[in-house]
Length: 540
RNA sequence: GCAGGCGUGGUCUAGUCUGGUAUGACUAGGGGUUUCCAACCCCUCAACCUGGGUUCAAAUCCCGGCGCCUGCACCA
Image (cartoon, rainbow, N blue to C red; front, side):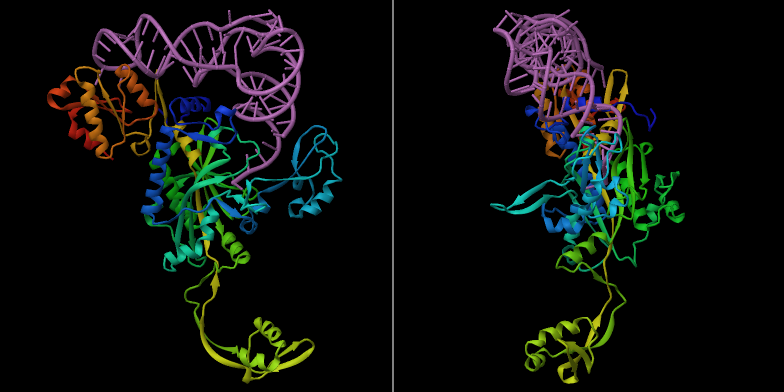
């Protein structure tokens, strides 16, 4: 079977997902609500295992600092992050044919205009499709809004990405890292976007789980591409349309990927995805064109999987520059900059003697302090305060020695994974069909269960023995599933359908010599081994 | 959000045109039999998306809502 082959379609995956307890539409009993899913017993296990693998890669191995941020944020924060402005589309629709357009796309230079300007211009424009008059402009924001507190409360929004939590926590995380750059924050959590028309189940959700890393570094000292990642094979589709199968090292050397940290995270993302079972032949990284780029990003590569629905984005590796930290630095009261090492200078500075200024100038002292805030103070500085010329002599100031560094906003590279999409793509791409037999061929690490425990029959004490074995498997940390219903073949089929990695069958010989039959899912190979050997093999 | 199509047990489906106690299969559960890759026999559970209208009577006809699919638009 070919690596890149597509063997199953969307409808089929959704049908089996429902049948086998992976996921189903939420609020089904009330007619459903588009864009929301419930995960069932098997789905929750799969998600948990994918998350475990992600944490292993990014938190445990790569040493990212993990955060779990609040879901609801204040308006001022989203103002600063750009989400209130940029996530907000001004829409008009045609009164005649009902088509809907983005107002800023209909007006020349509309993308640069303020809302009120746009509203004035749009009055004179008619429907591009049928030339009928257009409706008044209405705003649509993709963020869910709510109100915080009693009564009218203050406006709040559900976060549309987990990233902002990490940006806001940057000064705090930096202290946890004892002031050292580079470092990365990592977060797993839910995000919310009020999509206009969510479709295709887990691929376009209104509530979804993100796994994000924000890797902070000094712009003057970008982490280099680690040598062990240079040979990572990767398929790249750059913005100019050229597709290349190359290595991360070559892509960086030839400047297809210009940032060493972006290159690093392309390699890491690829490693992670392959480790959870994404077939390399179905994976590529596609560079965004400049018109596609999000408001914060200067370079972005989407990791995409080839599915029955076309290429589906499951991870974005974005160079966000200093967009977010400088936005929060400017809008909030906190310092988000860091000193640039080596720029530390000793300076002789004159500081005003506020006590003396106050005694001498009384009410004007405040104005003087403000006036000297932005100039370099030295003896006999002359100022104009309320039309009066004032010369500050040495008596009003004293000289101090200070060590000062240049300050800079760190830059950030962000790999951002969508868990729900990953799970869907994994189900689809690991689907195998062989005649009547259909099974999910996930690596053991992301299979929902390690082991099926099945007595060949439910008599002669075989089921009792199987229960005992079940317990001993669970005791040593094996995720085991017990099934005694129906023929053994049927049980294998059920186990295969959700991708249980091993099956263990208990028969009469088990009662005599303690051996069992161990079956491996993909090959269907069976071997008779002692229970102890079997459990050791199954144990992860 | 617009247009078109669709909505029947857990799943797939017949029935809708032509209004009258909803068909079949699979799955699942119980029992029997058998035992290493969805075997067989018996039994059981279980459905007309929702709200209104027309009618003696609505799964069926009409209108609204919700959901799904396709196309357009949108998409970090």
